[in-house]
Amino acid sequence: MKDSPLKCDFPETDLEQQLEKKLYRTHGARLASPPARKVAGVSDSSEKMMDGVAHISERFMDIRTAFLTFRAGQVVVVNLFMAVVLALGWVVSLFFSKALLAAVVTFGPFWVAVYLFEIFFPLTLPVRIDREEGFVYVGHRGTFYRIPWDELDVTFSYNWQYLGSGVVWERQYYAHLFMREKHYFCGKPPKMPLQRKKIFSGFKEEKMYRKWNFIVRYYNEGVVEEDIDHLAGINFDSLRKDLASSSIGKRILEYSLLILFMPTMIWWKFTPFKYKWPKEIEEIFGEINYY
Image 1: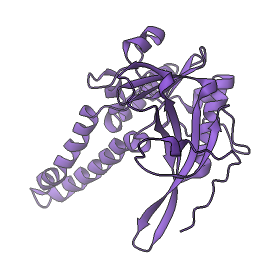
Image 2: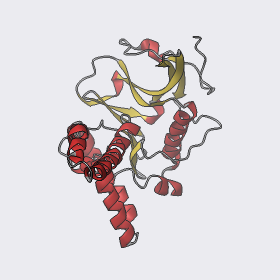
Image 3: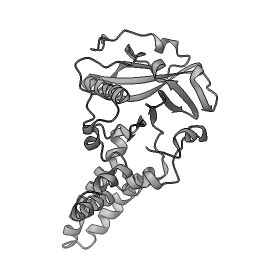
Image 4: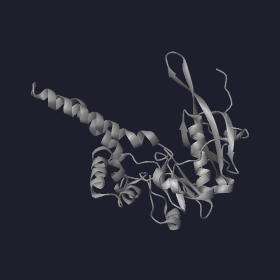
């Protein structure tokens, strides 16, 4: 199948070819920075960005880089599924006494496994963009980089994904951030002079561009009014702040739904099983760990 270029008009780059170790190969790499610039004709709105942002303020923003949709939605889906299963089991148990027990025995272990995964498998530390000082902080396998915004290397690329027996291929798009040895800040010394980190990916090219445009807009302009509404539920602290001005009834309903269907949002704030920024970075921002 012939590789076709990305739609954006950014220049091509050979950054990937400079890697000593290629974990996977992508195609049509385009250089989005430096200098960081938006993709023309694509929105920079924060709408539907909650799964990609862990924290936002005038000082800095934390960008989630892994388990975005999966970690945000799996507990909701599983809990809804179990609610239906248990309800059906209860109805059937009116006629067959052990139906509810059978449903619990059949699906209970899977339910428990999902929660154990959420409890003990920490979320990856985000990429932190510091507007005030003009740096981007990146953690990669115990090595922490402090990259000046004006030297940030970000590329767009794609790879072919096989999706079915009918010879169905689809392009999956990536935005990668490249980390150079000269930007090493703390933690384990880098093993290679150049490494890369996936900051987001997906099958919709325009959505990848919109995420990037949002990041660039945030760095240049800060938080705008629409961001407050669009990103109100990105973490437990921001959700509580947003609900503080709501009626008691709405707060009770929202917290009840949160506990029933998305308790991990609360767990991510208080869990002892989580990665933390090293002390060198906490000396700059304080003990602030969002996921």
